[in-house]
Amino acid sequence: MPVVLLPFPPLTARTATQLIRDALSLTNAVGVDQTLTANETTDCLRALNDLIEDWSTQSLAVYGLSNQTFNTIIGTATYTIGSGANWVTNRPVRINGDAYSTVSGVAVPCVSVTQDEYDAIQIKAQTQEYPDCFLFVNEYPLGLVTLWPVPSAVTPVTFSMDMLLNSVPAAATVLQFPPGYMKAFKYALGVELAPVFGKKIENYPKIIDIANTSFANIKRANSDNKKRLMRVAPEYSDTSWETG
Image (cartoon, rainbow, N blue to C red; front, top):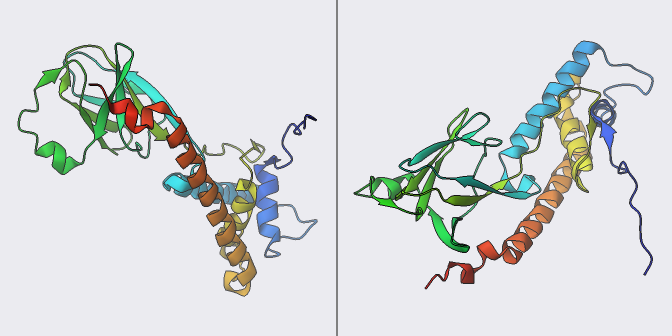
């Protein structure tokens, strides 16, 4: 069977400046031979990062899940999570579904609960080797994870988190995303930047339609990928919760 070698860097890779110019060209906001000023480039880069930040809050706009494992601390119920936190990682926007503890090589469920469900627990200081449930509070700049019962041993707990879309630090940064993302960014950014450059986006209905369609396409692809991952990963199968 022939081996297909994918190009490196990918054909869709481009700098932030190129993406911005592509987006502006959709509404003829800049001419082919026109050079953006430094201030215009800064404004466009900020708009791009605002768009990335907005998409990161939408689960299906994020293309991957990341299983991350953290150790509990004996006698500690609540942990900060994020950069420089008790559990160091990118601060999650959300934690997907249930988690699991690993006890003597066995995955034991750690169920996600709401604030009301946690508040209903009468003996919050109850201890146990591993937690049965967790509450995630999306605080800023650090998230908060509260475990119950309070761990009485050091136990690894694994959570499933959306991989965040990283912000773009400079206009010269080379962007690489899975298939479909570059087009979605191009058209969404075109819609965002049109009024900044004095263009009425309502005069470009096709641009709006393509922006909506391409965004829906990546959400659909991400939904399929996440469902497939959840089915394949043993920690998310129903049988993994059967501990006897």
